[in-house]
Image 1 (cartoon, helix red, strand yellow):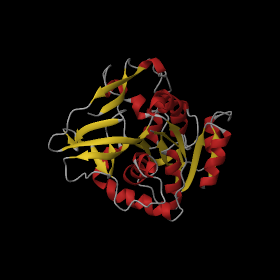
Image 2 (cartoon, rainbow, N blue to C red):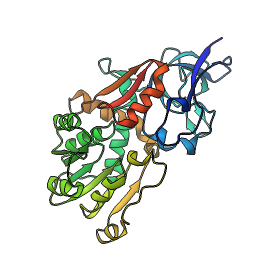
Image 3 (cartoon, rainbow, N blue to C red):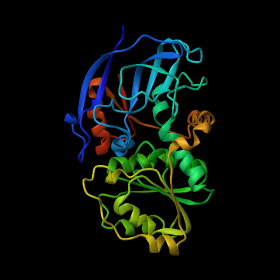
Length: 334
């Protein structure tokens, strides 16, 4: 008999999430049937999308959804032998009995067999996982960046934004980033960003963007929404491309933010704006992770993690991530 600890969404978030919105429970897992796998969580990822899509994807009383890196303890599926490590869409659960595939696609995915021993496996949830792939696909598939172009990225010190900037440099682009603290600005300069500014201390976002790139931007990797998005639109080159990955500035709003209607700029500058989700290119993930691994082994990609220890601290880690505390990818280690 295996018992699992689970974090339940007790109450839908109203504004910024609170500890009381969650409840820690324990349950007894069923015995394995043919095709089942028992996994034990090792690392959890906490990400902004969990806040953005909670009401769309969850009802009160559900286990909080999310991705974990887990170890297979028992298996009745030959494709997932005992002892292997997997990425699992299992939610905030210490242990899970599941089949590898669900109605909407894979629940479990094996870590690539070429994973180097000297690279932390937790990066499979960060720069070498969903955030890194979001950066890669947003640049290659949506923006279709070309050498010599100028790219703007907001929330540039985050798990996705920091990868966007580094991949831009690998591809021969100029990259401008914004972040919310002087420490984050300093980190982005270490990563090789061409221009960086603290959006909280500049007197004007539009002036800061014009100063960073007087000729405008070919591409914008959008992570924040709000006033920054409007300012970015006003500084795009004709025919500019915008990849909309996130909108963290508005996730906790209880009333919609009002902003100037952007249609004039979109039309006259002939801008292309496309929202995307990393799952659109899931069929490419294995090859893409190998590319990211290669760049990291070559020293072209650097990363930071903010690691919280203890399954009982999942809600606290989630809320710290939403506040923008720390630099890098937020991870919980069991």
